[in-house]
Length: 186
Image (cartoon, rainbow, N blue to C red; front, top):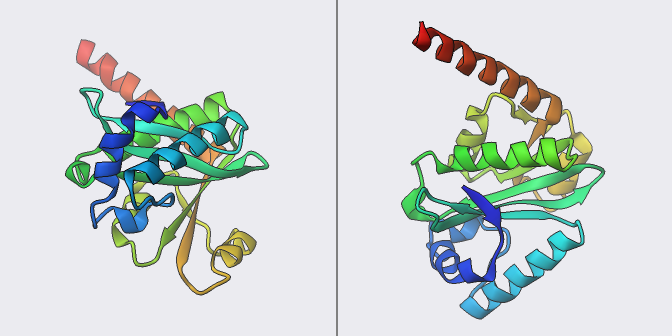
């Protein structure tokens, strides 16, 4: 489902990223293939320096369909950035990718908080975030971060995923899945 970024995936990813329903919401925009290759190379190098964590999202056949990233890592916190190619919208890939990425971030890397800044005009992403039971709207609770994001105007909503809330969700979900499995065996 996820793999480390690789220059071999650039062609497929660039074609998906440039769709008009996707491109406006991509953080690392590239206007041509060579620029996308350059940005991807920089991303790989930045991950090696510990500045970000970036993964390619794969479909069930191993084809690249988008990316998921944690940017601006500081004090065990960072900002989530994710996009999927238009043909993969609404098919459950976003949730699967986030689940896998959050597991890695919280349980393998020491990240304590994941922030999501979502443009107020991006209703699709806001609804997706608000469906997740471990996401908190943090416009008021993280006011200084919210104000910094919106220094140039009221553009973003700020969401927070704290490790403890995510862990509680995983523990509850895991217990429910185990209980369901035992019922099926009976």
